[in-house]
Image (tube, rainbow, N blue to C red):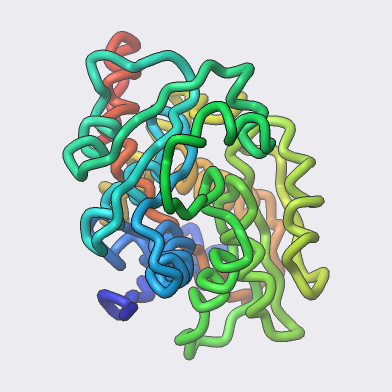
Length: 301
Protein backbone atom coordinates (compact mmCIF):
# COMPACT_ATOMS: atom_id res chain seq x y z
CA UNK A 1 0.00 0.00 0.00
CA UNK A 2 1.31 3.39 -0.97
CA UNK A 3 2.07 6.24 1.41
CA UNK A 4 -0.72 8.75 0.67
CA UNK A 5 1.48 11.86 0.90
CA UNK A 6 5.10 12.81 1.39
CA UNK A 7 5.25 13.81 5.03
CA UNK A 8 6.49 17.39 5.45
CA UNK A 9 9.17 18.41 7.92
CA UNK A 10 8.21 21.73 9.51
CA UNK A 11 10.77 23.84 11.31
CA UNK A 12 9.66 25.68 14.43
CA UNK A 13 11.10 29.16 14.48
CA UNK A 14 11.02 30.77 17.90
CA UNK A 15 13.23 33.26 19.77
CA UNK A 16 13.13 30.78 22.65
CA UNK A 17 14.91 28.17 20.51
CA UNK A 18 17.35 30.70 19.09
CA UNK A 19 18.28 31.68 22.65
CA UNK A 20 19.00 28.02 23.45
CA UNK A 21 20.82 27.46 20.12
CA UNK A 22 18.54 24.58 19.19
CA UNK A 23 16.88 23.58 15.93
CA UNK A 24 13.50 21.85 16.24
CA UNK A 25 11.62 20.27 13.34
CA UNK A 26 8.22 18.55 13.44
CA UNK A 27 7.69 15.48 11.26
CA UNK A 28 4.05 16.04 10.33
CA UNK A 29 2.88 12.44 10.36
CA UNK A 30 -0.56 13.80 11.23
CA UNK A 31 -0.88 14.84 7.57
CA UNK A 32 -0.36 11.36 6.05
CA UNK A 33 -4.07 10.62 5.72
CA UNK A 34 -7.21 12.51 6.63
CA UNK A 35 -8.63 9.70 8.77
CA UNK A 36 -5.81 7.16 9.24
CA UNK A 37 -3.27 9.67 10.44
CA UNK A 38 0.14 9.63 12.05
CA UNK A 39 1.49 6.50 13.64
CA UNK A 40 -1.84 4.71 13.09
CA UNK A 41 -1.17 4.57 9.35
CA UNK A 42 2.36 3.36 9.99
CA UNK A 43 1.19 0.69 12.42
CA UNK A 44 -1.65 -0.56 10.27
CA UNK A 45 -0.15 -0.59 6.80
CA UNK A 46 1.80 -3.88 6.99
CA UNK A 47 -0.91 -5.49 9.10
CA UNK A 48 -3.43 -4.64 6.41
CA UNK A 49 -1.15 -6.02 3.70
CA UNK A 50 -0.74 -9.26 5.63
CA UNK A 51 -4.46 -9.57 6.32
CA UNK A 52 -5.25 -8.99 2.66
CA UNK A 53 -2.62 -11.49 1.49
CA UNK A 54 -3.96 -14.13 3.87
CA UNK A 55 -7.51 -13.38 2.70
CA UNK A 56 -8.89 -12.41 6.09
CA UNK A 57 -12.22 -10.65 5.73
CA UNK A 58 -12.52 -9.14 9.23
CA UNK A 59 -10.28 -7.05 11.47
CA UNK A 60 -10.80 -7.34 15.23
CA UNK A 61 -9.13 -4.98 17.65
CA UNK A 62 -9.43 -3.41 21.10
CA UNK A 63 -9.61 0.04 22.63
CA UNK A 64 -11.31 2.53 24.87
CA UNK A 65 -14.27 4.67 23.90
CA UNK A 66 -12.03 7.56 22.78
CA UNK A 67 -9.33 5.44 21.12
CA UNK A 68 -7.45 6.83 18.11
CA UNK A 69 -6.66 3.25 17.17
CA UNK A 70 -10.34 2.26 17.11
CA UNK A 71 -11.16 5.22 14.84
CA UNK A 72 -8.21 4.52 12.53
CA UNK A 73 -8.93 0.79 12.24
CA UNK A 74 -12.55 1.51 11.39
CA UNK A 75 -11.46 3.98 8.70
CA UNK A 76 -8.90 1.53 7.31
CA UNK A 77 -11.49 -1.23 7.16
CA UNK A 78 -13.84 0.97 5.19
CA UNK A 79 -11.12 2.13 2.80
CA UNK A 80 -9.51 -1.26 2.17
CA UNK A 81 -12.54 -3.54 2.22
CA UNK A 82 -12.48 -5.23 5.63
CA UNK A 83 -15.30 -5.75 8.07
CA UNK A 84 -14.21 -4.34 11.45
CA UNK A 85 -15.12 -5.25 15.01
CA UNK A 86 -14.02 -3.16 17.97
CA UNK A 87 -13.93 -4.66 21.45
CA UNK A 88 -14.55 -1.60 23.60
CA UNK A 89 -13.38 -1.30 27.21
CA UNK A 90 -16.22 -0.41 29.58
CA UNK A 91 -19.98 -0.42 29.50
CA UNK A 92 -21.94 0.53 26.40
CA UNK A 93 -21.35 4.20 25.65
CA UNK A 94 -24.70 5.80 24.78
CA UNK A 95 -25.17 8.13 23.14
CA UNK A 96 -22.05 7.38 21.12
CA UNK A 97 -19.24 9.88 21.58
CA UNK A 98 -17.58 11.43 18.53
CA UNK A 99 -14.95 8.68 18.21
CA UNK A 100 -17.39 5.80 18.35
CA UNK A 101 -19.91 7.63 16.19
CA UNK A 102 -17.26 8.00 13.50
CA UNK A 103 -16.13 4.37 13.82
CA UNK A 104 -19.74 3.21 13.59
CA UNK A 105 -20.27 5.35 10.49
CA UNK A 106 -17.29 3.52 8.95
CA UNK A 107 -19.12 0.24 9.57
CA UNK A 108 -17.40 -0.95 12.75
CA UNK A 109 -19.36 -3.29 15.00
CA UNK A 110 -18.84 -2.82 18.75
CA UNK A 111 -18.62 -5.38 21.51
CA UNK A 112 -18.52 -3.86 24.98
CA UNK A 113 -16.57 -5.65 27.70
CA UNK A 114 -16.38 -4.65 31.36
CA UNK A 115 -13.00 -3.46 32.60
CA UNK A 116 -12.13 -6.53 34.66
CA UNK A 117 -12.78 -8.89 31.75
CA UNK A 118 -11.02 -6.54 29.34
CA UNK A 119 -7.77 -6.93 31.26
CA UNK A 120 -7.74 -10.57 30.13
CA UNK A 121 -8.21 -9.74 26.44
CA UNK A 122 -5.00 -11.50 25.40
CA UNK A 123 -6.04 -14.83 26.92
CA UNK A 124 -7.46 -17.77 25.01
CA UNK A 125 -10.40 -17.87 27.44
CA UNK A 126 -11.34 -14.27 26.60
CA UNK A 127 -11.24 -14.92 22.87
CA UNK A 128 -13.28 -18.10 23.19
CA UNK A 129 -15.92 -16.26 25.22
CA UNK A 130 -16.17 -13.02 23.24
CA UNK A 131 -14.88 -13.76 19.73
CA UNK A 132 -15.59 -17.42 19.01
CA UNK A 133 -18.61 -16.63 16.82
CA UNK A 134 -16.54 -14.52 14.41
CA UNK A 135 -15.35 -16.33 11.32
CA UNK A 136 -12.11 -15.61 9.50
CA UNK A 137 -10.72 -12.68 11.49
CA UNK A 138 -7.33 -11.04 11.87
CA UNK A 139 -6.56 -9.85 15.39
CA UNK A 140 -4.76 -6.52 15.85
CA UNK A 141 -3.62 -5.74 19.42
CA UNK A 142 -4.81 -2.75 21.42
CA UNK A 143 -2.96 0.32 20.16
CA UNK A 144 -1.90 -1.65 17.08
CA UNK A 145 1.55 -2.65 18.33
CA UNK A 146 3.08 -5.86 16.99
CA UNK A 147 6.09 -6.73 14.84
CA UNK A 148 4.41 -5.56 11.64
CA UNK A 149 3.49 -2.26 13.31
CA UNK A 150 7.09 -1.73 14.41
CA UNK A 151 8.21 -2.46 10.84
CA UNK A 152 5.91 0.30 9.62
CA UNK A 153 7.17 2.76 12.21
CA UNK A 154 10.77 2.05 11.19
CA UNK A 155 9.93 3.94 8.00
CA UNK A 156 8.96 7.21 9.73
CA UNK A 157 12.52 8.51 9.42
CA UNK A 158 13.35 6.66 6.20
CA UNK A 159 13.13 9.75 3.98
CA UNK A 160 14.88 11.99 6.51
CA UNK A 161 17.59 13.93 4.64
CA UNK A 162 18.28 16.24 7.58
CA UNK A 163 20.87 14.98 10.05
CA UNK A 164 19.65 15.20 13.63
CA UNK A 165 20.75 14.40 17.16
CA UNK A 166 17.53 13.58 18.99
CA UNK A 167 14.05 12.44 18.02
CA UNK A 168 11.12 12.80 20.41
CA UNK A 169 7.79 11.00 20.33
CA UNK A 170 4.79 10.34 22.51
CA UNK A 171 4.34 6.78 23.78
CA UNK A 172 1.29 4.63 24.35
CA UNK A 173 1.96 0.94 23.72
CA UNK A 174 5.59 1.35 22.60
CA UNK A 175 5.31 0.43 18.92
CA UNK A 176 6.14 3.81 17.45
CA UNK A 177 9.20 4.45 19.57
CA UNK A 178 10.43 0.91 18.86
CA UNK A 179 10.37 1.55 15.13
CA UNK A 180 12.14 4.87 15.58
CA UNK A 181 14.85 3.27 17.73
CA UNK A 182 15.53 0.63 15.10
CA UNK A 183 16.03 3.26 12.40
CA UNK A 184 18.62 5.38 14.23
CA UNK A 185 22.18 6.07 13.18
CA UNK A 186 24.88 5.50 15.83
CA UNK A 187 25.08 9.15 16.94
CA UNK A 188 21.32 9.59 17.37
CA UNK A 189 18.91 8.84 20.22
CA UNK A 190 15.17 8.77 20.94
CA UNK A 191 13.33 10.22 23.93
CA UNK A 192 9.87 8.82 24.55
CA UNK A 193 7.20 10.66 26.52
CA UNK A 194 4.64 8.15 27.89
CA UNK A 195 1.07 9.41 28.16
CA UNK A 196 0.30 6.97 30.98
CA UNK A 197 1.13 7.23 34.65
CA UNK A 198 3.36 4.45 35.92
CA UNK A 199 4.56 3.58 32.43
CA UNK A 200 7.81 2.01 33.56
CA UNK A 201 6.50 -1.27 32.15
CA UNK A 202 6.93 0.18 28.67
CA UNK A 203 10.67 -0.42 28.81
CA UNK A 204 10.08 -4.18 28.84
CA UNK A 205 7.64 -3.91 25.95
CA UNK A 206 10.06 -1.83 23.89
CA UNK A 207 12.93 -4.23 24.59
CA UNK A 208 10.95 -6.97 22.79
CA UNK A 209 11.33 -5.13 19.50
CA UNK A 210 14.48 -2.99 19.51
CA UNK A 211 18.02 -3.65 18.40
CA UNK A 212 19.95 -0.94 20.26
CA UNK A 213 19.97 1.03 23.51
CA UNK A 214 19.93 4.56 22.09
CA UNK A 215 16.73 5.55 23.84
CA UNK A 216 15.17 6.64 27.09
CA UNK A 217 11.72 7.31 28.54
CA UNK A 218 10.82 10.48 30.39
CA UNK A 219 8.02 9.70 32.84
CA UNK A 220 7.50 13.24 34.14
CA UNK A 221 4.87 14.62 31.76
CA UNK A 222 1.82 12.35 31.98
CA UNK A 223 -0.22 15.02 33.84
CA UNK A 224 -1.69 12.47 36.21
CA UNK A 225 -2.33 9.62 33.79
CA UNK A 226 -3.86 8.65 30.50
CA UNK A 227 -6.30 11.29 29.19
CA UNK A 228 -5.69 13.42 32.29
CA UNK A 229 -5.17 17.11 31.56
CA UNK A 230 -5.03 20.40 33.40
CA UNK A 231 -5.35 24.09 32.58
CA UNK A 232 -1.60 24.51 32.05
CA UNK A 233 -1.53 21.78 29.41
CA UNK A 234 -4.62 23.05 27.58
CA UNK A 235 -3.21 26.59 27.59
CA UNK A 236 0.11 25.32 26.18
CA UNK A 237 -1.62 23.35 23.41
CA UNK A 238 -3.71 26.35 22.39
CA UNK A 239 -0.80 28.80 22.46
CA UNK A 240 1.36 26.40 20.45
CA UNK A 241 -1.29 26.09 17.73
CA UNK A 242 -1.79 29.84 17.48
CA UNK A 243 1.93 30.61 17.41
CA UNK A 244 3.27 27.78 15.24
CA UNK A 245 0.17 26.72 13.27
CA UNK A 246 0.54 23.13 14.45
CA UNK A 247 -2.43 21.52 16.24
CA UNK A 248 -1.63 19.10 19.07
CA UNK A 249 -3.83 16.63 20.84
CA UNK A 250 -3.86 16.83 24.67
CA UNK A 251 -3.46 13.09 25.29
CA UNK A 252 -0.24 12.36 23.40
CA UNK A 253 1.45 15.05 21.31
CA UNK A 254 0.48 17.92 23.62
CA UNK A 255 2.08 16.27 26.63
CA UNK A 256 5.18 15.37 24.62
CA UNK A 257 5.62 18.91 23.32
CA UNK A 258 5.01 20.39 26.76
CA UNK A 259 7.69 18.08 28.12
CA UNK A 260 10.12 18.94 25.34
CA UNK A 261 9.67 22.68 25.89
CA UNK A 262 10.20 22.22 29.62
CA UNK A 263 13.40 20.24 29.05
CA UNK A 264 14.65 22.91 26.67
CA UNK A 265 13.95 25.56 29.29
CA UNK A 266 16.01 23.52 31.77
CA UNK A 267 18.95 23.30 29.30
CA UNK A 268 18.64 19.53 28.99
CA UNK A 269 19.93 19.52 25.39
CA UNK A 270 23.41 20.33 24.15
CA UNK A 271 23.55 23.70 22.43
CA UNK A 272 23.55 23.37 18.67
CA UNK A 273 21.48 20.17 18.74
CA UNK A 274 18.91 19.37 16.07
CA UNK A 275 15.73 17.79 17.42
CA UNK A 276 13.07 15.98 15.39
CA UNK A 277 9.59 15.79 16.92
CA UNK A 278 7.28 13.12 15.50
CA UNK A 279 3.69 14.33 15.33
CA UNK A 280 1.77 11.07 15.74
CA UNK A 281 -1.66 12.51 14.92
CA UNK A 282 -4.52 11.74 17.28
CA UNK A 283 -6.34 14.96 16.48
CA UNK A 284 -9.68 13.17 16.13
CA UNK A 285 -9.76 12.94 19.92
CA UNK A 286 -9.99 16.71 20.37
CA UNK A 287 -13.76 16.78 19.86
CA UNK A 288 -14.29 14.19 22.56
CA UNK A 289 -11.87 15.92 24.92
CA UNK A 290 -13.68 19.21 24.44
CA UNK A 291 -16.92 17.49 25.44
CA UNK A 292 -15.24 16.49 28.70
CA UNK A 293 -13.66 19.91 29.27
CA UNK A 294 -16.87 21.85 28.70
CA UNK A 295 -17.94 21.78 32.34
CA UNK A 296 -14.51 23.08 33.41
CA UNK A 297 -14.73 26.09 31.13
CA UNK A 298 -11.77 24.84 29.08
CA UNK A 299 -11.54 24.13 25.37
CA UNK A 300 -8.92 23.04 22.87
CA UNK A 301 -8.83 25.25 19.79
